[in-house]
Image (cartoon, rainbow, N blue to C red; front, side, top):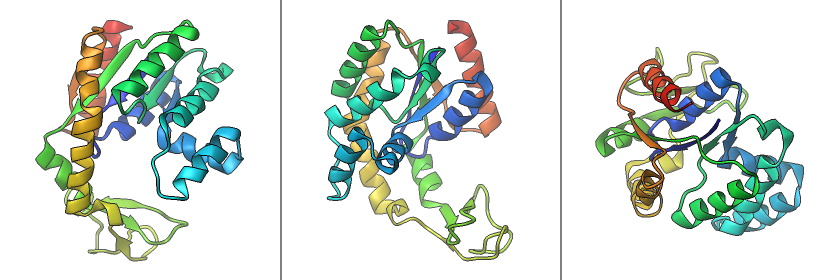
Length: 218
């Protein structure tokens, strides 16, 4: 199966992708993870990506596409994969279509995890992370609070909010998503592979809905 996940920041698609990849024994291809791996490994694509990342610039489409081309042609992807964070624009989606055609593959399903924007803001701005890098435990002031305010349950170190998790930055990130990535919903809806999942609920409930939806198309 070839699966693509869509969803705004805070929708929980990363969590669901990881669970689904483990459940189906598929490769989970996260654009952020792949970029970090490519940079660390010093691959040609990684070197190219790093030159932009070091300047605080977005990695160009051609570099991202080359990175996914490298990965999708690996034997580990022969039995299927889950895409997370790519494509982000219609232009990238068209390039992915071309790449998949070259590989004689096609997307089995596109899962759109939909969450109300007010809840997205609440989810993201409430996130807290342990300042101890060796621990890295994550919490949420409302949904998964620590036993003691701003103190990690695991190691006792202080918790912090990521600089890009404040309300102003999150609102900007959601605006970018609406402008650049949300159009992919219509793009994939035309190809009849799009299925929308309600992302407002318990993780287990949402995962069960995803499994039911995929089973119909499998």
